[in-house]
Length: 89
Image (cartoon, helix red, strand yellow):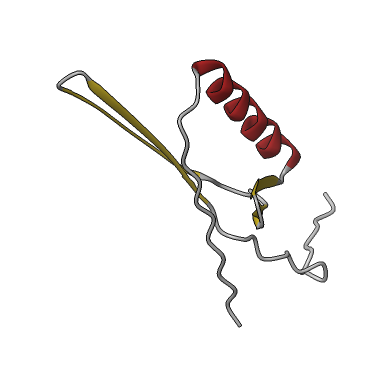
């Protein structure tokens, strides 16, 4: 059974707050767990394996936009009873 959960948040923040949020997300990637919470909404993501990184930026008429997207899939646990082949020389 597939489980789906969405989390959305938008606000206006000063540069120092944005930097702090990016550092916190960086720490979450290092720890393997990102927790996003606002009010009653919460989602826990566990980045692992190969992560797809997409960066889009745009500047037009004095307005700038930056979108950073990360995507990954849950890793399938490796078979601990896998065949092992050795050679003796």
